[in-house]
Length: 143
Image 1 (tube, rainbow, N blue to C red):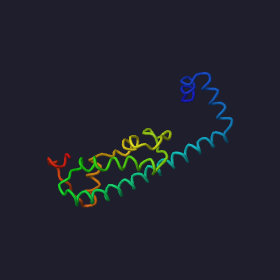
Image 2: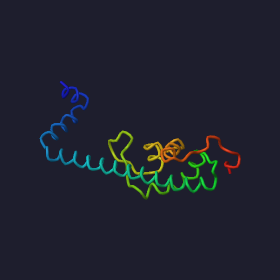
Image 3: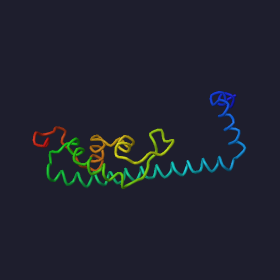
Image 4: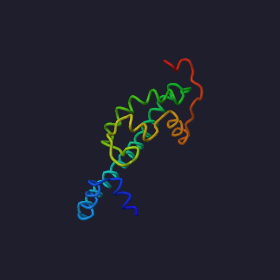
């Protein structure tokens, strides 16, 4: 019953493709294997970006907290983001798409959306490592 529904959605050429894939199991297995390896490599690269981002944020935050002890998460984000966005392209080639079906290039904007890199992310990471931030932004920090 499900196969009939799928065939009706795919049409005549889609049904022919399903028949071909069912009769050529080696090709189908190979394609699915390549897709699985690509997905695993993308997840690994995303994990590596998250680890390196955490290290970069901790390193830069400690430096900025020494210079400006009253800095906020937004202030840190504005100072860290330019360096982070340049580094992301060097850390990975691709990551899984947001639906995790195919790979997309590891660009700063796609990675930022995928891992939710934001001032809140920075504040949570620093809180996890015992570093506290100011909640109010001062006048002189806006420079």
